[in-house]
Length: 415
Image (cartoon, rainbow, N blue to C red):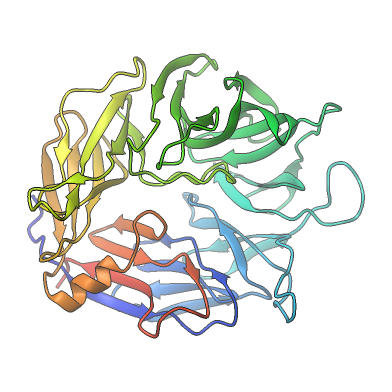
């Protein structure tokens, strides 16, 4: 049990005014900073009070950000080459860069042309990183870069039958979602890649009629897929676990409204609110009626990746709270319990085997703070807990945002 679990607001930053829809998704942390995309910029906010330690100005808006960061503090992101102007308010997302999270320096910036020829730049939609490799993908092509120099390592091949890489998942390994067939009848394969050469280590073919696939975890490989257009509210119909040789271990059905997760069909590494570790996958169940009778609640559950069966035990969110896994911490799960009508949110550490919980942070019950905390939808905004601090941050801003819209709300248990 931590010495102190009661938190206070460390800082809050309002949304700045914007002229058009602005993507500010992405969040990284260091010991001293919370780093967040802004309007044509990346900003390193001091964890203590939210003031800017550095600002990296960019020519255009950020379009996507890696959810991973390197051991030496490098994080990859995509951005537009110029400012958006009327009447189109659009620029292609052609630029790849890596920011030094400690200093705010842009380590490198580059763009590439298509592997199939021509001098038009590839427009990317997502980026990830694994070890010393950055991989970016999009409907017009992809490429992998050296994390340190920005040198192109490889470009994915496009087969004569139209097979192409659809996107990448990173972290401890690098995997590609590869699509063949036609857009209305795709055939999807997930390949583990050698990050230095791009050559497949193994290939796992998903069932016929799989419309989309998301990499939940690259190692161990866990895939969330929509098979037969039967995905439930969580964004997938099935979870597949695959061993180190590309053989399927288990298939976990998730049709209907079984889980309160969020996976976008258009991106290969977009799943939120799922954690993988201890040979298990940890999931939040969908809402059910709470003890109050009018506020909903849910549970945290897990499934064995080898057998696909539910494991014993579960953790109830309790009251009128909802609970969501954020990430693994060794053999434990770091989870976020949302605010209720009369109490603030919490961060808890959950024993990955027995589901016993330890409260790490309890946020203020005061109404104004509780309402501000509730203003960040867990399914879409970035929720990060690190070093005794909880950061809630928006992923999208628009001109229609209310005057009291929030960009970042940070809590701390420190004095």
